[in-house]
Length: 231
Image 1 (cartoon, rainbow, N blue to C red):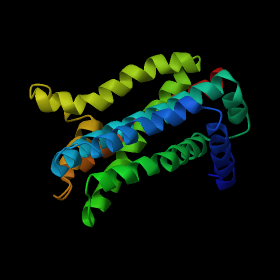
Image 2 (image 1 turned 90 degrees about the horizontal axis):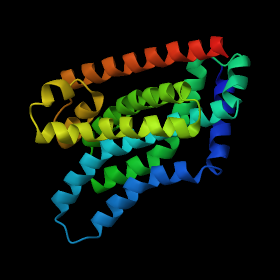
Image 3 (image 1 turned 90 degrees about the vertical axis):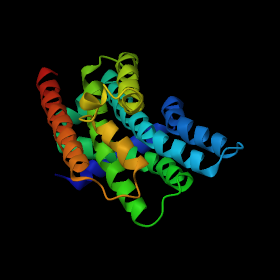
Image 4 (image 1 turned 180 degrees about the vertical axis):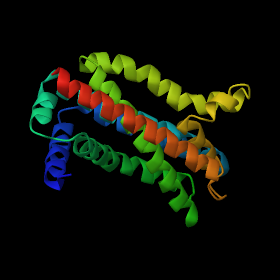
């Protein structure tokens, strides 16, 4: 793995961000919504609970849009083909995209942690869960970005996936019949961990999220190699 290539692709993504206001807005919508609710006459505990529910949704939105939309745009402009032809390995390309998304996402996450009233060990637990969830989401978004033929086509795929990943935990909470299936999805485990952040992370949560991450990364690498050969 070449850190020079990772740094080069990472820098390119940061520079291109100024040319993509839609992506910037997607990173700001939920933090602004959280700010709006924090200024309303709502009990502090309710604001904190809403914030902890919004955080998994925010990670899902940023990860999917940040990777899927970005990669689809590069594919449409043939930038991705150039990267593939220049010996950029899947791990290097994925690392640069993940670092880019995590950098931009970190500001919103920090604000949600502040609004959620996390303290001490709770912050560490939240960061662990967010990192695992982000890796799952970014791998999934990257795969969609590779499959899509254009940025518009990618957005049509990303929107329903984002709704499923982001809203599934809430639906599982309202309808317990969905929970036996939903609990094996990483976003549900994220939501449960955030709402019970004062307690130690269950081993089941860590195992399920690691299994989700391994599956998403494996699918991404397979699709990446297929695109390299096809192009």
